[in-house]
Every structure is written in C-alpha cells, then in structure tokens.
Amino acid sequence: MGDRWHIEVDRSVCIGSSQCVNQAPNAFRLDTSRQAHPVDPETDANEKTLEAAEGCPVEAIVITLLGSGEVVFPPEE
Image (cartoon, rainbow, N blue to C red; front, side, top):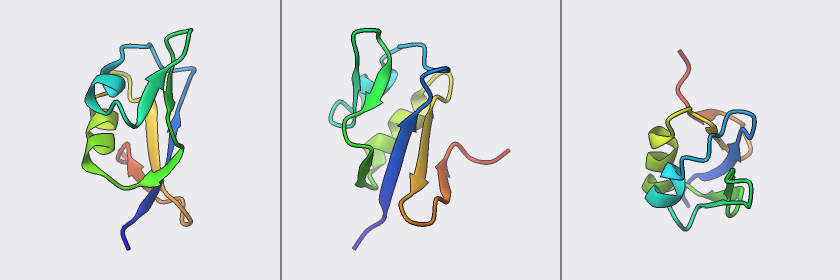
C-alpha cells in the first residue's frame, strides 16, 4: 500500500493563480473567491498533486504524510 497525504492550502498565502487546478484538476478547485482548495484533503500520494504544489508561485500548498505529519512539500530550508 502506498503513502497517503494530507493536503492543505494556506488561504492567507494563496493568490488564486489556478496553477494547481491546471496541473492537477482532480486534486484542486477554486472557490468563488478564487482561492484554491483540495478536492479531498486526504488522498493517495501521486505525482500530479506534488507537481501542482511545486508549481504554486507562492508555495501555498502544504503536503504532509498522513499519520506521521512528516512534511512532503515544501521542503525544509
């Protein structure tokens, strides 16, 4: 069984660029305020979701491992 992730979008940082929606339309959506939200905050690990997080121009997406809380993205400085 593969890893499971918890996905959060920091709404105080999100600028609504929709890069995440374009990269991973099954994982993210924009609300009426043009803020991103995960479609499902708990999901199987997958490359498209990670690429969407990496492509966020303001690093508003945080991915952690379910259970341990270990940070998958963004990498620690």
